[in-house]
Structure formats: structure tokens, C-alpha cells
Length: 345
Ligand code: PHE
Image (cartoon, rainbow, N blue to C red; front, side):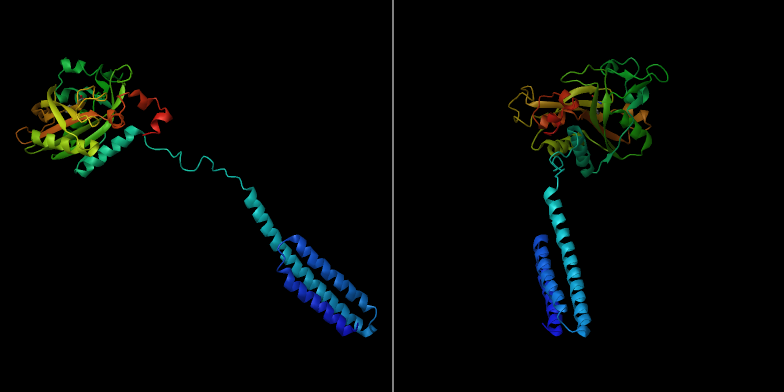
């Protein structure tokens, strides 16, 4: 072969490698392309021996250039193939460590907290303010200002837990949320439209229906010319928001801080008053107490009973999630924190 033919041969081998290397998708076929090219260039090299001395360096340079081009192109292509291979290997070997994190075990609020917030939403919608108050109270707010004088028999009904602070029997864990009626009237100018959800305490031995710690929600309205009709209408509205199509019932009762007072019940949402286990076959579920704010209470808070009137009601929150789930008031289920139970709510 002539020097010119050898140079062309070297260049064409390099050109072919430039084209074909791009099509190689694995290292083995790339190696095959490289091997064929190097065999062909070896033939060119052998050919150098048969050309004139002056042409040898021309062919030699063309050969070196072809080798350099091939090395570069093959090197680049090898890097691309290796990167793709290790990426697909990584993808194949990927460990799914999200096995328990697929969202099905996301927590949720405790059933009592859910109802607590729902109650707040209902009353905010009616234009009420939400307040919270201290769980450790004094005798004045929990009893005295609420018209329970010392020695009053109704105090005994409250099974108070006293705190060893200050004068004996003066500091206590609030037995109801009603002391917040006093705190609001002491600090705010009427009109007052407020609800106060909170934790309350009584000296009870825990059993299926009792717990020394429980939750109440208090409602207080102080305005001019407030009537018992306003109280009943308000209760009706929020019972319906909470339970759907139900009725409310008021039976005469007694609380020192309301006059007249009534016991507050809702028609059983499960049996439509025909009687079932949830309502102990009475058709009604008792939820709490209510009444018109006693003039003595207004006076204790320096409000003139001739000018201001109001109503209040208070009831336990804890029964509500149970009622809604048709559970027979087994409050312990709420506090045992058995997730198998809580997750269903
Ligand atoms: N505080 C009373 C209780 O715990 C309920 C109540 C609140 C009654 C407001 C009348 C008015 O039993």
C-alpha cells in the first residue's frame, strides 16, 4: 500500500470508530469496536515498513492521530456507559425504607380534642369568644362568688380536691368550668358572649363512668334583656350542629348560681327517643346544667342585676365522642390510650 493509502486507511478507521462508538450501549460491544480498530491500525503500522523513508513520518503521524482520536472517543463513551450502568444498578438495588411511612399511620387528634375544637368552631360561628382559665382555682371563684356560701350543702356534691397552698381549703382544683363565669364578669364589660372549654377535677374513683379528671365546656352570655328563650334557642342551635336532627329537653333543677336552673338533655340521636342502650332506654341523654345567671352572682361581680341579665350552661365534653360512636359511656376507653380504640375515631 502506498503512503497515501495508509494515511487514508488510518483516518477512515478513526472516523468509523467516532461513528460506531456512539451506538455502543454496553462495555463489551465498545471493547469489540476498539479491538477491531486496533487490529486495523496494526496493519497500517506494519505497512509503514514498506513505504519510502520520507513518507514514514507522515504515515506515523496519521497513525498516532487516529489512535489518539479513538482513545478519546472510546474513553468518553466508556464513561457514559459506566455512569448509566451504575445508575440503573442503584435503581435496581434501591431499598424501600418507607414501608411504614405510607401515610396510613398518620396520627390524629384525640377524640375529646376533636369534639373540643368542633365546639369552639360552632360557637365562634355564633359570634362567641373562646376563653380558657386556670385549673387551680380559689374558693371565691369556684364557690363563693357562684353563690355557694361556706357550709352550703351543694359544696359537698362537688367532691373537691384541695391543693395544699394558702389558707386551708382555699386553693383547689376547679370542680367545674363555672368559675370562669366570675373571672370574665370581673374583667370584662358586658355584653359577654363566651365559651370556656377546659379540664375539671373531682374526687372520684375512676371506673367506667367516672374519672377524677374530665372536661367541661361552659357558656356565658351577659347582655341586656336576655331571656330563657335565648338560652333554649342557643342550646337547640348548637345541639343540632353537634348531633344533627335532635331535640333538647329542660327539666327543672338546682344550681346555686342560676335561677331558674335546668338539667339539659338531648334526644337520643341513635333511637329517636324509642329507647336504646345508649340512652338507658329513656330516649334522652343528659349532658349538663343551665339556667339564668342568679342576681347574687351578678352582684358579686359588681354588675347591676337591674341592668344586666344572662344565661349560662355547662356540660361534660367527654361523653360526646362516645355518644357519637354509640359507645355506652365507657370513659375509661378514652383515657386508657389503647391505640386500637383511639384510631377508630
Ligand atoms: N357547673 C355546673 C356543673 O358542673 C353546670 C352548670 C353550668 C349549671 C352553668 C348551670 C350553669 O354541674
